[in-house]
Image (cartoon, rainbow, N blue to C red; front, side, top):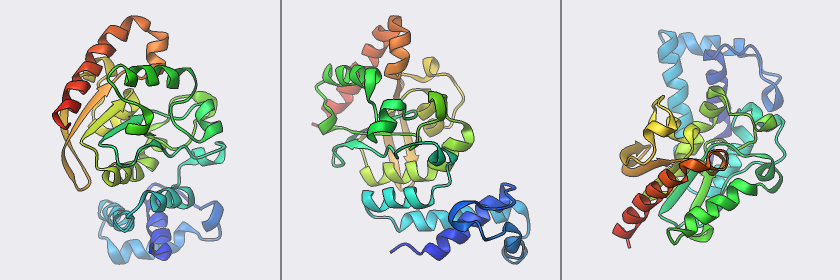
Length: 252
């Protein structure tokens, strides 16, 4: 059972250290100033206070044991501002028992309408890409680096991505894949913690740590929306898909 009191306190501490003066929504009657005393009692400086807030949020996430619990927590407590403009949360699609997990960039208009990732023309191309290496949606698991559509299909901001990131990491931990495929620049840069462009980092295997998972085999590929605009890069995309196929065969 999630301790909502601890959760709210952790969120308020997070807001305080990021310079927020007041909270809108469920916590709107509570002023951040009320938590200045918490800062002085629990931390000797701003950095230590930040670490305390993160640890408490991590503790709450550590109590999550199922995808349904995680989705409920995201809906009720993730402070991403995109919630206000999106129609639906876009959580996931596919087989949660799959050992192949794909993380895309951000939901678009079609995803926002359906609540499912990778729809529309880009989704159709992804299906063809998966089919080329004998994969389907029902034997993979699909999600995004953020859970709500940015207005006008713009790129998500760093703040929006970071507000979702602890929940995305927990999502990966719960699925516990053998292979993690990062579809597009936003997902690759965030998970790999690098600033290089997708053309520099695609097609290269990395062993990464995500929460309790170690040596997770991960690779970045072009997003299908990018390939629609840049069809000349499909040859490179096919080379990356073949690498994924080889890795999949190691586990089957």
